[in-house]
Length: 367
Ligand code: 5AD
Ligand code: FES
Image (cartoon, rainbow, N blue to C red; front, side, top):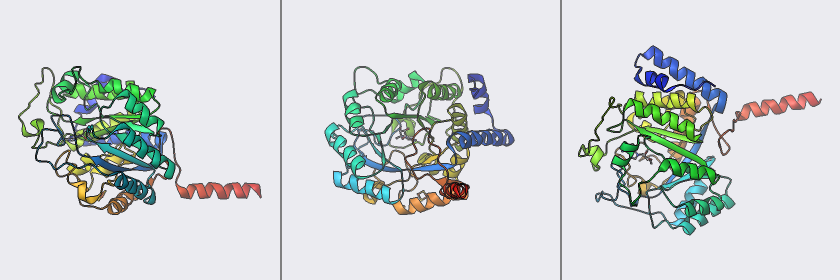
């Protein structure tokens, strides 16, 4: 496949004519169908802790946000959510948290191990920047995937919005390489329309996805959170060259489509942030522009509103089974089907019906 060049990416990112955009989304949709098929994988999200030691300038979980009541789920609660994921027919659980030092490596490893032993679920972790030893221990316990968005490939902007905990600044791109080397499927991703983010840096993000050969790529709009420096306008990173990229829906669809075309094999979610800025159509439009994954929320209701990364998050009030039904309905309305397996990179599932048909054909051939 011919990769899009930086100038071509830029041209598409600036495109606003509806007819051209329909062409782009149609192209991405064909690439999606050819490379990862019509299955939409459901990944059940468990937000296991809202404690966070970091001060990311955009995120509602940042340590300085004292407005937030913090929680950490008990082991039993997490295991029950995992069992529910299996009952609902999901292939994966994603355990996500802020960078919480009280999530101890061996405690987490035991939970991963239990889920791998007692269920058929793939296990994805998304627990922030942790040490290589911790990544290794969790991998040995059976974790299959790790998500760590690098948020922007623009080093200067990254530094401006991620005050470091350590003397040396963090390098999430390097951590993603480490995760891959440990045998994880590695997921990166970015926010679109961060104050200080240019069109050029978005094009750079897509080229970085490809260079890293990421297995999963999450893309969502930046949503201002008033309790954070970037959301309140207290911090305005300066743009030296280029033009501020908007945090619009359209910009996100363009990024998803261009990412699908550039990284055809990747698993790409239609994100909750996208559903937040367009409740009724956001997820579906993402799925039509190249995405092939959705992440229904499994977090117990009493914790839902406390995991406030950004305000007015979609699906805060819907139970796990409501989201399950809602998403399956959306998937079917697009003429697609819900994946039944783990849905790792490179798996192309066929719908159940066509498996039955294939089986019948084999029987007929044998007769
Ligand atoms: N708007 C949109 N997305 C956000 N995230 C964090 N804060 C915001 C925000 N204000 C995203 C980041 C992070 C993921 C868990 O949530 O990309 O990696
Ligand atoms: Fe949660 Fe539709 S996905 S209500």
